[in-house]
Length: 315
Image 1 (cartoon, rainbow, N blue to C red):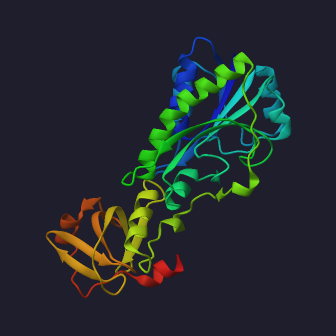
Image 2 (tube, rainbow, N blue to C red; image 1 turned 120 degrees about the horizontal axis):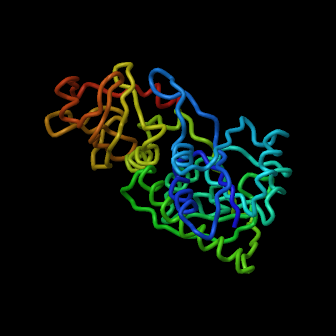
Image 3 (cartoon, rainbow, N blue to C red; image 1 turned 180 degrees about the vertical axis):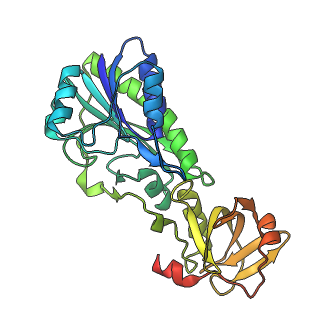
C-alpha cells in the first residue's frame, strides 16, 4: 500500500517507524510542520518525525499550510492509497482529503467522540476517567468528527503523568494502525458514525492551564500536577516568583489554603481547599529542579509563609 504520513508530535514516532519497517507498505513521503525555533537561543530545530524520516531516506514535505494549491499538487503527485495522520496540527481540506485512493486515517489519542481536539490526553486525566485509548478514524472536514474504523482501549493509571500516558498510547497506536490497514486491505473496514450527543472538546493547552488554585481540593491539585507534566507544567507563585511543581501527592492536613503546614528537612506541605499537598519535587524560577528538602536548604520558608493566591485565582 502506498502511504503518506502526516505528523509532527512525538506520539507519531512509533507509528511512522512501524510503517517504514513494514514490507507490505511504502511510505512515499512524510509531511510535517515547518521547523520551529527552540531552546534559549531559539535556533530552528527539526521535529523528531522529520529526523527519523531523513535518517530512513524518506522525502520530507513541510508546507506552512497543507491546503495551499502547491501543497495539494505535491500530494497528488505522490498518488497515495492512504494518508495516515497522527498529531499533525493542521486540519485537512476537502481537496486534500480526496487525494488518496482509499482515504485519510487519523489516529486520535482518545476514545472518540470523547475529547475531540488538541489535548485529549490531559482532558481524559482531568475528567478522572478510568480509561482512554487510540481511535483510528476516517477523516472528514470536521475536527475529529469522522467515522470510526476501530478503537483500542488503555487503562489510565492513578499515578502516571500525562507524558507517561502519552508514551503508552503511542505504543498501542502501532497495533491499532496495523489492524486498521489490514482490515482496509481485506475490504472489511467499518465506518461507524460518531454519536454527537456523547462528544466533548479538548482545546489546546496554554501555560495558564498549569496554574494551581489552592482553593481546590488537594486530590484535584495532585491530579493537575500529573496532567500538566511535562507541558505546560503545574506551577504556583512564592514570593512573587514562579515555583514549578514537578511531583506532588495529596495528604491529610487542614489550614488556610496556600499556607505551609510543614516546611522542614522532611519536605513541605501546603494546605489546600480540602486536605493538603505534599510537594516532592519543585523548581524555583531561574533554578534547577530539586527535591523539597534540597529546595528548603537554599530557600527557607516557615509556617508563616504562603503561596501567592492572587495568581491562582486569576488562573
